[in-house]
Image (cartoon, rainbow, N blue to C red; front, top):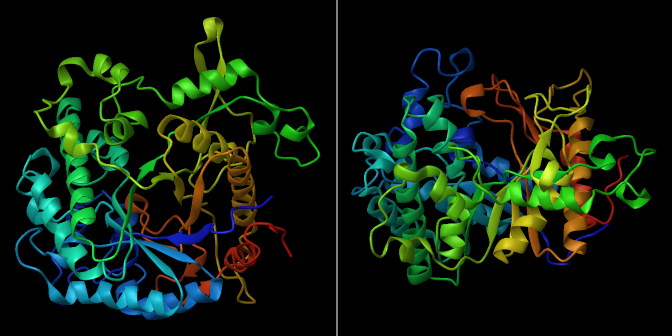
Length: 471
């Protein structure tokens, strides 16, 4: 067990999920502010108006990060807080908030990792067509330039866009994320093309204009398939494991690899549709064939804009599907046995997702990896004695980190791990029903309480992952 000596241990958040201050100090509305006011869209009518009030309590929250021993903090910037109309006028109060946050982090010895876009799109630009409008590429470029000009003397680590597979895929296809309507598959592919171009243009701006030498990447959903084996099903430590001959068959590994790196359906639950253009300079051929007439027009120069060198590839991984090879070697997904562990969202626990996901993606793209999100939604509360005993989260994280360590020992260039999330927060359409945080938030009083997982994680960080024991 263990990790490289310079491994980055962190936690992650996003602006809309924790900040609150939805209209404070000149901030403009985002599409999430708008969606939360549509009846029936969010669990019990919850909104992100206050959230965890990180906007008012950032200094206190940085103190808690230091108490945990975080080496890095991944957070996103609210585009409409910085530019209320999305372009043009800059809101100095909004920029000043992020400047203070960065300064607090650096003073605490915590490295900031900034994500430029984590879904809170300016409402004013949505009304001008959002990502369907080719001008969105220039809008994002302008926003990037404003942020880089103010923060890049202190921020070196940048992520352009978080999880386009979600805000462009099921979000727009099923209508449960902003703007709450339904787009055709062809429209979503066009929006995705513009998003990829915006990513590329943003990378160009960061590299050309950052005041300190930057490290640039992004954060994508890791849609992982793992090969079937006894170790996937058996959570009993006395049962079969990889070390005891419970490894997968070679044909199942190959089937899982092919499915992880393929486009099989007219949806966005794919790794390669987004990663291939950015890292290889082309759309994957199987997707082009499948999408056919829905394909967006790729103009001369578009792919050159998208295909920018990246310093790292961020993957957000929580679960996986299990695959075995059928007749002829074609992979097929197999279900989980009754009683297989799940989190509060009913996502199945598959720790091997971090091993096989990191391995398959690194083999294809040969780009250093960060796990930019991984975490557990639990039914957490403050006990009568003031503690939050979230031992399921500890066990989940320990198992996933063990698999990530195995990937590193097998040659995958893994640079860091960001636990999702630092704080209990507004979990999108689930409102405040789900708790992913290392820190419990009472959403009535906004009191923070370090969970037992936070204390355990502090020990893991101190030992650089060499000791992940409990108690």
